Image (cartoon, rainbow, N blue to C red; front, side, top):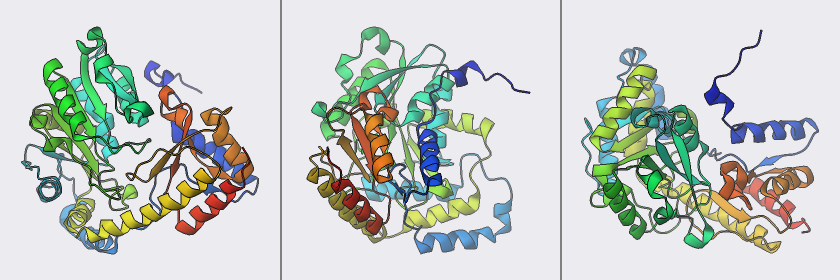
Length: 387
């Protein structure tokens, strides 16, 4: 017997990475040696001190029971301490920090706390698909803000119609940005905070890639005056410490926004396993040299792949942040069409920009989360392409 999906599921597009996985499996079944530059899942192992802390924590009987909904105080204190060291931001671990089962979980649940049916949520396009999907689940209306290269892939908030602003509850921002790798200047954050105060809109900042950079460290929106009045920030240990599978993250910022998210979580999950939180505490206490090693690896990988792409006259957006490259497709190709060409001819998986939204058409994304030798092999294959 088959059952009909709910209306909210019917309106969802296929999840981007699920569709890519299907195509990849089909090619692998044909015997192809696939190099997967599609999904941003770090290939390097979690640093050993974190793994050892997690192993030790597994032995503790107190962690074998239900965890607290908001997360262990010790983890929330470690988050607050890290934010103070890294950004100079002061946070109250009791009221301004909540533990997440990965930042995706928090992002998906957050609109449920503040969006009513018919409210608008301002979402970047291209952008992480969960911003839009979580809006739909909450009964809201996604209003897409095109991120254009001529604007440094920043949203034009001055172009939003008044009728949308009057019913807008949240604006999502994500810098350093996935998929474009763009960074936001201080002037943008200051303008955004003034905008949020003027219209009573919540700023939801996704800062998951803040530690992946080569030169100037990206900033948290909470560093700016007035931000804590209107902003919540989502962060994760996934990219910084190669902990994607551990599912540990945090949300910080305005205490009423944290409280709202906390109420949702109380009713839909039972908190993160405390042994994993202990591993997270260890991660947040590590010297920055651990992360610097990762930055150096990604910097070398970026150089290798950028040179290969430029050798066949592809236009790569210049950035030193995230572990992504954002590239224009050649003339005569769509995003999906060029991605299919790379898979069919070279057995290389990339992500078509259109999968991140309509404004992503004309681009594709490469993830640098592949062993450097395999990345060089991919670069050699790309250099053989005649366009």
